[in-house]
Length: 127
Image 1: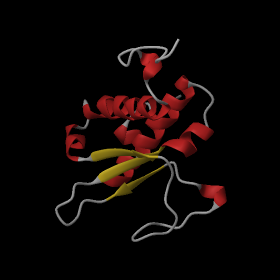
Image 2 (image 1 turned 120 degrees about the vertical axis):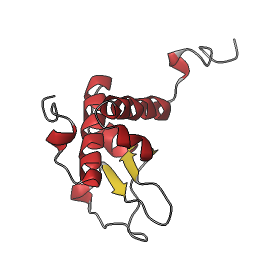
Image 3 (image 1 turned 135 degrees about the vertical axis):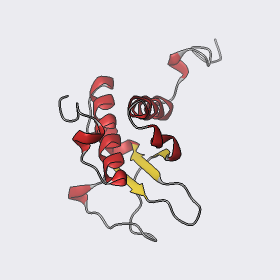
Image 4 (image 1 turned 30 degrees about the vertical axis):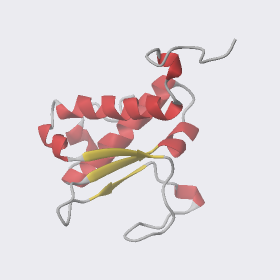
């Protein structure tokens, strides 16, 4: 029998990248209820952080970043980036992954807004 195991609308057909992007989106939606200004920020998922590039911070093997921020400038919106592979490597299951994704999103939003993570999400660190 040839063809996909499940039709595209069934969750089985979602790629790991799609599932991860949904986790980021779920986290953003949770925060937008409290912080409507997040609608003006782009949230991106990249596979891995880049090595030193223009305006990028250097990192080492001991401290691979899980996320980052790019401030708004030159007419571009601010961006929050979550790095999929480093987060996946540090988690074992979907629930643990969802919790770490939310933690990373909260930390990056806090950095961008100049607030503490606990101010952005009062439940930060409870998971």
